[in-house]
Length: 491
Image: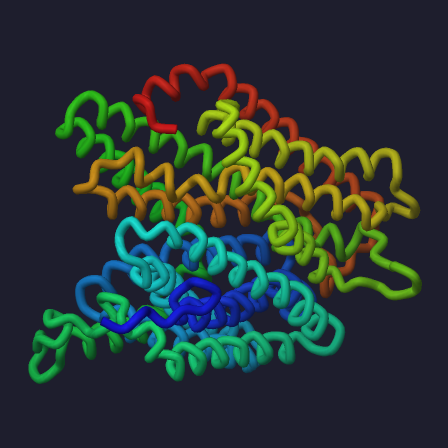
C-alpha cells in the first residue's frame, strides 16, 4: 500500500481546503464588512432599518448550513454541494453590483443559500481526511481555522478599504472574485482530497423523483427558488421574529424530549444544552454589534486618523480577526497547560468569563465617551481595546461550543443537537440587528447633524449592554454548581 502523500505531516488535501475556505471567508466577510455602510451611505437607509436588514441577512446565513449539511449527506455529496454553494455565493456578490435595493436583496439571497451548502460541508471534508483516532485531526482543524481567520483579516482590510474609499461596488466585486478563486482552487485540487468519503452524489441523489428529474436536479432548482424566499424574509424581517422563536421552541422541546427517553442523565444534559444555547445567543447577539452599531460608531464618533492617514470605518472590524490569529494558538496551549495543572475552568466558568470580557469591552467605549472624547470623538485606541476584550472573550466560548455539543448529546440525536447549536448563532445574529437598531442615527447618507447627541446614544446603549452582560456573567457563576450537576461530569 503506497504511503500517504502529506504536506507538513498532514494530508495534501488540507492545503486545498485551507485556501478554498480562506477565499470563501474573504467573500463572506468582504460582503459583511461593507453591508451596513452600503445600506446607510448608498441606499440611504436609517440606522434602525439597516440594522434589521443586516440582522435578518446574517441570521439566515447562519441558519442555512443546518439544511445544507443534511442535503449533502443524503443527496448531493460534499463536493457537488460545495461547488453549488460557491457558484451561488459568487453570483450573489456580482448581482449586488446592480446598485439598488432589489439587486442587493437578490444577491444576499444567493449568498445565504450558497453559504448553506459551502460552509456546512467543507469542514466535514477536513474531518474525513483523517481516519478515526488519527492524532493529527485536531492539529489539522487548527490549521484549517487559521485559514478562516486569514480570509476574514484580508476581507476586513483589503475589501473594507477598497469598498469604502473607492466604491462599494468594487468591494463587492472583489469579494465575488475571492469566491471564484475558492471555486477554482477547490475544483482543480480535487485529486488531493479524493480519498475523503462522501464526496460523490449519493445513490439516493441519483434517483428520479419528478418525471425524468433526479433528486439532485430538483434540489438545484429548489435552491434557486429559495432565493426569492430569502428576499421576502429580508424585506419583511419582522416575520423572522416568529419563525426563529417557533423553531427554537421546537428544537428545545425535541432535545429535551429525546433526552427524557434516554434516561435522567441525558434529560439533564439536554436541559443544560438548551441553557447554554440561550447563553450563546446572549453572547453573540452582543458580539455581533461589530458589523452594525460599532461600525457606525467608528464612522461618526471615533477619531480614526493615524499619522495623517484616516482608517476607513469598515476597517476597524479588522481588529477581531487579527487578535484571533495572534491569540488563538496561545489560548489553545493555555487550556492544555491549565488541564495538566488541574486548573482548567469548567464550561460554565468559561462561558461566564467570556461574557464578562465582552461586557467590559462595551464599558471601555462608555469610559472613553465620558472621559476621553474630543469634539465628540473617542480615540481609535478605544476600539482596539474593545475588540481585544471581545476577542479574548470569544476565545473562551467559541472553540469549546462544538465539542461541548458532541459530549452532551446522545449519539442518536447528535445531528439535531448540532443543528440546534447552529440555530442559536442564527438567532443571535438576528437579535444583534434588533439591539443595533436602538442606536438611532437617521441622518442622510449616514451623516448625523449632532455628533454629541449621537455619542450620548451610543454611550447609553453600550453601557446598558455592558452592565447587562456583567450581570449575566455573575448569574452564571452563582449557578455554575447547578449547571455542572446537570452536565453529569461533562467538562
